[in-house]
Length: 115
Image (cartoon, rainbow, N blue to C red; front, side):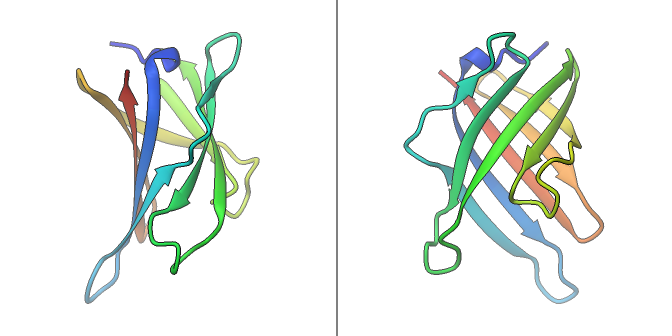
């Protein structure tokens, strides 16, 4: 099953920092601005902000890129190098798509919800 970016209407993200004593999760929601799909349908751009505005007031731009039917990557100014594409693992259900990025001491779960 492939992902049609035109069907994704809302995004949220959970970013988990893995610590020795306790994991720290940060929750992000899409801003009011609707996602924008490129004319060729191979990428979608949107913005996210932290649910806890006392913790982080920044708004982050995110672009998901479809490299092939089953290969995806992400670019975002949330990361140190906004131009660097990071490969994603993908899990697809009837209701949503979960994009997963795993690092050494953190994991990102980005959820895209179908209309």
